Image 1 (cartoon, rainbow, N blue to C red):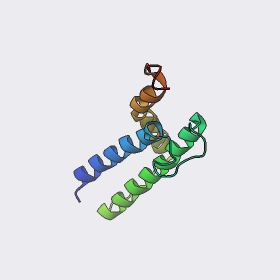
Image 2 (image 1 turned 30 degrees about the horizontal axis):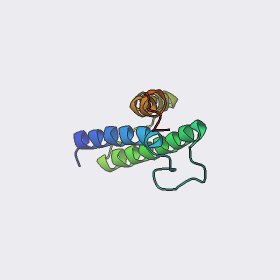
Image 3 (image 1 turned 120 degrees about the horizontal axis):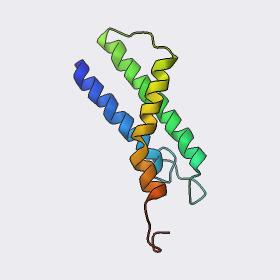
Image 4 (image 1 turned 30 degrees about the vertical axis):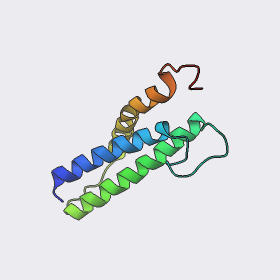
Length: 104
């Protein structure tokens, strides 16, 4: 896999991981919860765990390419902020869109 393909794969995975917590009521899209609605704090925790998974995959792809560079706290802060920005469509869909009375 070349570096351009790996970069697009990571961007796609980050967009997917940022929005999964908002588009489903189950944990990680797999495990059903006992309550009908997932709390917002649980959505943020799920997004943080998915962020760590995507960063791990990115690190693995970078190591396979042969040029893994050490990253400081600035890299992780910027990528976490990018994850939050990419989660905006899911947040809007879950919390800000108008719903009819039949959607409740």
